[in-house]
Length: 122
Image (cartoon, rainbow, N blue to C red):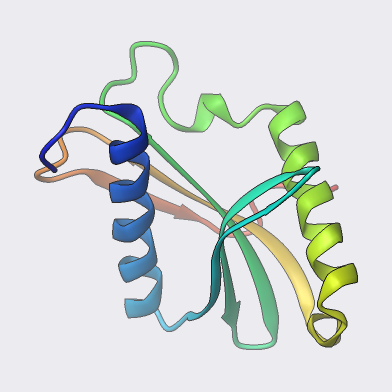
């Protein structure tokens, strides 16, 4: 990672998470899905599930780490964006859905990664 700017770090983290999830057998559907309600970093298929993935990277745990930044308000926005996606792409409704989170912390050269399946329900 060449820059310390937040957008560059975010893109790097999403790419890192995307590659990791593909290695775990998930199939990419789309990235950075945006609508008025919010944004979903990654949408992937995992077996019979459509998976809405939020990616969070923090270099340190000083303010609670990556997981602490996904509060109930953020979860609601992700869920609203997921509902919009399902209404827009009706063929996606054939899948069961879940919300996963990829948490990354530490130096970019060797981040600690945790994939949390079914991270939250709404």
